[in-house]
Length: 144
Image 1 (cartoon, rainbow, N blue to C red):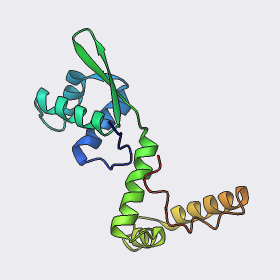
Image 2: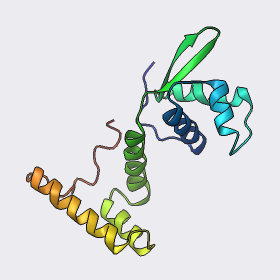
Image 3: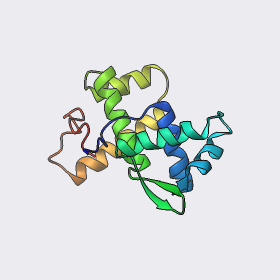
C-alpha cells in the first residue's frame, strides 16, 4: 500500500496529531481523553481517524497487549511545511510572496516580524548564495 505522507491533514486529523506530538505514542483511549476537553468523540470515531492517519502514512501502530499504540511518523514542522505549501499553491497560485503580502495586509505581520524575516532571508542567502530567496515558489510541494 502506497503511503501518502504529502496529503494535507483535515482539521480533526490535525487535532489528533497534536495530541500525539504532545504525548508521544498513545493508545486510542488516551487520544480520546485528550481530545475530550475540546470535543466529545466516541472511541470508535477516534480509532477510525487514527486508522485513516495510518493509511495516509502519518502514524504507525504497534500492538501492545490487546490494543494498538499509535505514534506519529511525521513531525509537526514537516506537517506545517506541507500545510503552508498547500495553502500557497491552492490560495495564492504558488506565490509565496502573495501569501506574505496577504499577511501584511491583514496586519498579521508586524514591522518587527518583517524585520526578523528579512534578517532570516539575509542569513539564508549568505549560507547559500546560489539560492535566489526561494523564487521557486515552493515547488517542492509534497516532498517530505
